[in-house]
Image (cartoon, rainbow, N blue to C red; front, side, top):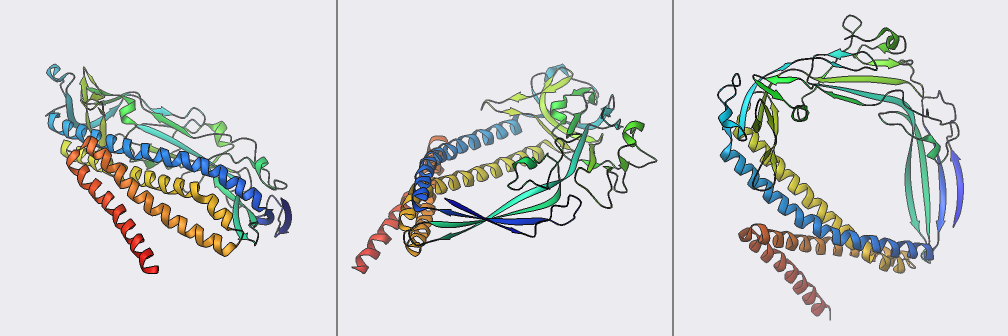
Length: 404
């Protein structure tokens, strides 16, 4: 293996505003490529097998979640009032709406910012060097490859620390060793809706946040010591450095809050508070939504979320199966790469083959899961999947017969 370097547009000035890049060429022999592809085939086999577990278990979770949602929708009791707690509803699934009342403020002890809110979130970003890598591969006769790696360096805002010591070319691109502050999330521990005390774990489910605009006139308790380092900006953020000309190490801080508001809750009544409700499907119901929302609407939203997650995991399982299968057969394409055009043709064919086989096997796996969890739909899907495979085999055999 041989590496050649070519430097292009290299700017090492820390205060510069533009990025820079350089390229590295790498010669990879056919033997090394074949060895790597065989190693990847093992990982592909593991991924291929894991995809069956993903697809099968996903269908089971989807069915159980759907049954739990239906069970909750049938058994939930909508309370006419939250001003008085009825002990007869203890351990039952209840639904109620009301205005949240807060017993205390949320305070960021690092900055002094203090607000009346259900949630307070602090986001911190630092101006840092960022490395990106782009690789172009050119196959050569004999099975070798020439890889051209292009490393590009830009200055960007990042919410996490970027370790510049791991850069391919770190000289002149040093980031600070640490961030002065990190992300912070605070949840109010004293929340009431009528006579009910609301657990912070449930309140954390509220996501409709508002930007907290800090101004010199309303600084929400910003400490004098912190204000000497961080200045209030027109957008309501705090900034350390020179905002007109950002430099490496500059920091900006943003805040968001979820204010006191009307909420709707579905949970198990537990004395003067609420808790997770256990269903017969070994699932829990613990829902909160902003505004005055009916129980039917809340369960409908939950059902839609379950369907969406089911399809997302179906796609994940299918892609894992297709990619795993492709990696299993990838060594064949590497062998054929002795003649690049032949390797490219075989690689394309393997991609189509892996996609089709994964599609049929995914349908069959889902069908078997449905037979196990919901028989009628499962049998129909199984027939569709098997029919697809038989049709493909028939078409392939017929095409071969015509060719001969």
